Length: 181
Image 1 (tube, one colour):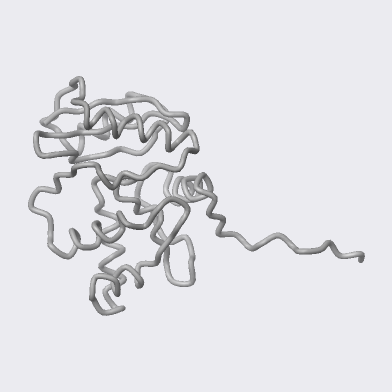
Image 2 (tube, rainbow, N blue to C red; image 1 turned 30 degrees about the vertical axis):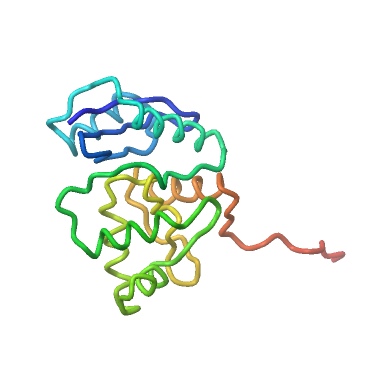
């Protein structure tokens, strides 16, 4: 198990991998030390290492993403280990939600053939997502296209910033015309 901390225009990210693929991605934090501490808290056996080319590609894509470039990570090889089959289906479906698009917990549940009541379980899968951004859980919203939760550093404000970076605005639309009174 190896890891690398790297800088983006939004802060310091971290990535951990093994021979099977990427196992952890840490969204931006204010310092390299905070990011390293979070990676090691989740993958304590990881050692700092120069990444192989396919991990370097994901790092470069993450840097371009946070610079505002439309990026997808569909080709990134991931290793979820002994992942629950339901979570694996959810993550695969969510990886198909592209830049600037969103879905809801309920829609994702329906897409994989689950009952709409499974939306709560989809939310649990989002909270446990080990590779946010690569599996774009920030694009999954609550019913009525409400923001919902976000367990990454910065919480819902980080989710909102990532969506706005992609051109998704969840607030009320600006008035079409200013009032004269």
